[in-house]
Image (cartoon, rainbow, N blue to C red; front, side, top):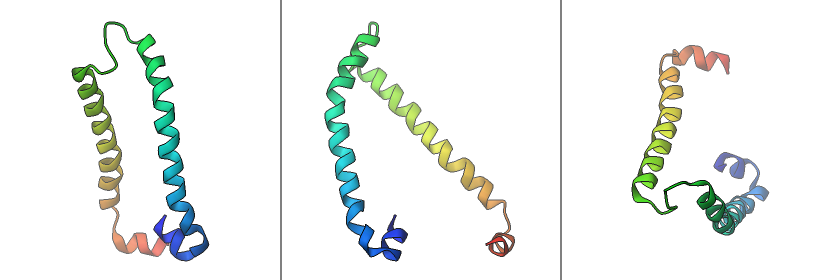
Amino acid sequence: MRRIAREHPQNAPLEGKTVDLALAISGEARKPLRMLLSTMLFDVTPNDPPTLLACSTMLFAVALAAMIVPARNATRVDPVVAMRCD
């Protein structure tokens, strides 16, 4: 995003507005989604600490794998070969 903002300065103000809009939408959508999820959960409250911890840990592990796997593959490429392809 920063490279785009440097190349096209007229788009720089949109970057902050987009984040603000996403936060506002997610904040307002949280209430109805919480009610919807509470109807789908059986014997688990939406604020159950072990469940929240397990879901957070699982999400962290998936995000970590999504970062590490491409990074490991990129380290196997010779930098000179990669620069010639560009």
